Length: 169
Image (tube, rainbow, N blue to C red; front, side, top):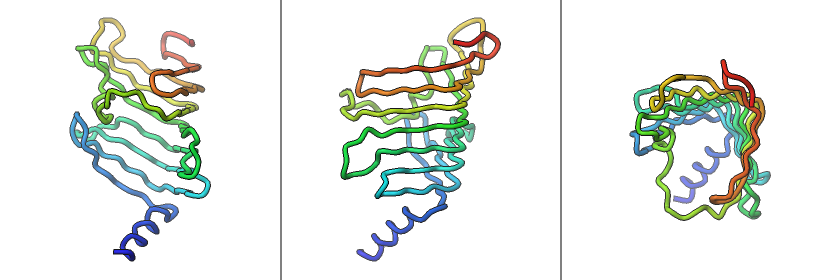
């Protein structure tokens, strides 16, 4: 049992190791794939290259060429910080007004999180399909730089974005 555990730890900490995981969600089995990643337990960081999330029918939900998460040290209570660069995300608002991404997240426990977090986005594209309104049924949103941080229900966001065909905000 001890040797198996050590083999598992060694596999997780092996640089340039990839993985494929199927994750059960309300929408069905979502597939997570990563070409390679590295985890530094002493520095508390995780870097992933070529990370993809796919819908149960195989369509892309998100493509993240590079993902960096810091603040993961277990001996410190730091706020995790996520950095996304050149990401592409597909979002659909259903006719009932619900955003489909909600169906891929774990169910809410009803209690706000007590863990602070921070996320920064650079050169990210959101492909948006709106089935709930008349007019612009689909569009692309380009985020040149954005930051979201907070804890629980208290969020702060500052985003530079361009809604393709409409303008910059």
